[in-house]
Image (cartoon, rainbow, N blue to C red; front, side, top):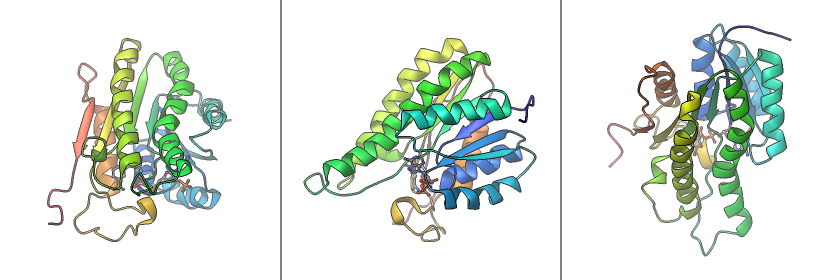
Length: 239
Ligand SMILES: NC(=O)c1ccc[n+]([C@@H]2O[C@H](COP(=O)([O-])OP(=O)(O)OC[C@H]3O[C@@H](n4cnc5c(N)ncnc54)[C@H](OP(=O)(O)O)[C@@H]3O)[C@@H](O)[C@H]2O)c1
């Protein structure tokens, strides 16, 4: 078992895309990080890329944010390995895009259970551990889709609008415990999100590393004030 005085973070869905970039940035800053995801192959490929990023240690755990027991196990294992928990980044998310009339109830549940209930699961299990450390940070990766609804995206937009409201309520609940809650709303990011090709649009989209830089800035921000909601968008979106 490794015990240290370094800060400790969990990044859900840290095996690919934005979560992977966030995990690399935290490890580069000397933070010990647990990364979760559903697919063992994605996790072992990610481990190799995160380990080389800096002095922080990395743990990878297969866990589905939709399953409360999985999130409890992740938090307990992280505390056992690293000695506590300071930072929770709720990044795991997915998009299934279809008109409401065509979307199946199972698809609706998959989106809402991952993007919204998954964040509740992780926060519920993590808050007692953050309180034990005297405070910490919860950063939720939402989306501009949470305020700009569009056709064919009712489930995704609703899940992210719900996440925004959840984040604001939670921020007010835990702030006097020195737990800071922020949510980040990116526009289009060059990842494999929703079966996309991460290289497509890489010339104009936000890079995953840009979102990671926002997370870093939030963690470094002076504790007397809180940037509780950050929007980030491509500077020159495709016309
Ligand atoms: N890309 C964009 O344009 C964009 C824009 C705004 C917001 N976002 C948000 O940013 C976050 C990350 O998106 P991304 O673009 O990086 O997507 P991505 O490349 O598809 O990566 C998604 C990550 O989440 C994990 N994941 C998915 N479902 C999970 C579950 N039930 N339990 C645990 N892990 C799960 C995936 O791991 P496995 O595949 O191994 O399960 C993967 O590591 C999401 O919340 C997304 O809504 C993305």
